[in-house]
Amino acid sequence: MANLLETAVNAGNFTTLIEAAKAAQIIDTLQSPNFFTVFAPTDEAFAKLPAGTLDALLQDTAKLKKIVSYHVAFGDVRSDDLVQIQEAETLEGSVLAIESANGGFKVNDANILKTDILADNGVIHVIDAVLMPAMVAGH
Image (cartoon, rainbow, N blue to C red; front, top):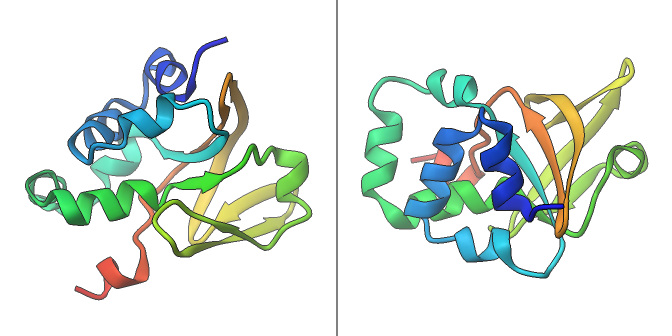
């Protein structure tokens, strides 16, 4: 299997996330032997951001790093684990709210579209929105 970065590249619909991860300098994390869970917004999710938001973030590496690392949780958290937890600690330092309802999952306000895309060093869950940590959303 491939690592999280290679798996995301191979999926083909995370181009913006990968670009953001490179700009935020967390590519090494996604390629590390440590296990992580990535709640990965699709390119369509990034397209829903207000006009100019992504360009502004790509210029603000510190803020971008907070946002991208907010999508990365510690450990290999698969769908059968998501059912049993209400939150997940992120690389950014905040906690994501996990909700299991109607046979599906939500992370904060985003819907998980697809679960359990497995990689050598973790798992990717596809989400339909970009998550914003509170300290960034408030600015």
